[in-house]
Image (cartoon, rainbow, N blue to C red; front, side, top):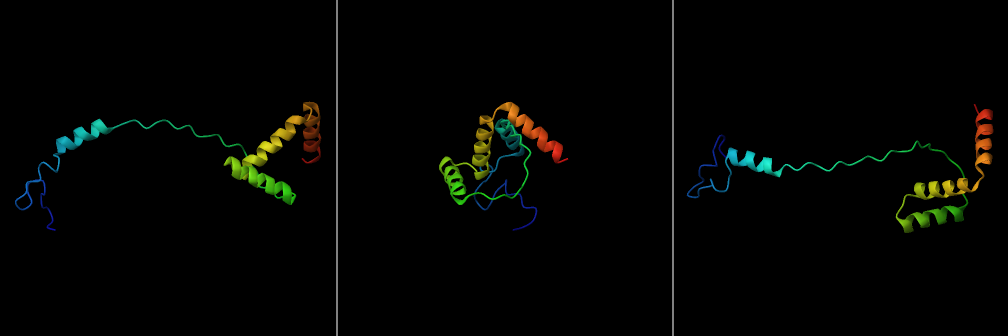
Amino acid sequence: MAKGKNFAQSLGSKKLTTLIPSQKQKVKEEEEIIIPAPVVEKKKKANTTVTTFRVKDDLLFAIKAVAFWERKKIQDVFNDAMENYLETLPPATLAKAKEEFERRNT
């Protein structure tokens, strides 16, 4: 291909001016196509900690099965289970346990 060749004028016997838009047409088309992108709100991530602990095999299997079945992450199923358990505790008991744990581990 030759450098600097203007293909908008012609190529052999075929005129390409109808196939290649002029600069004015390009600008006009681009202005018409501009569509504002929808605003996507980012989810706020809760603070997490990586830790290690032992889980009974049957409980882990059940958590994995529920995560698979509900198309969730294992972490989300585990968090839901822990939140449900903590909601069953009396608020005063949970507050006292947190306070005592913090006092002894600082």
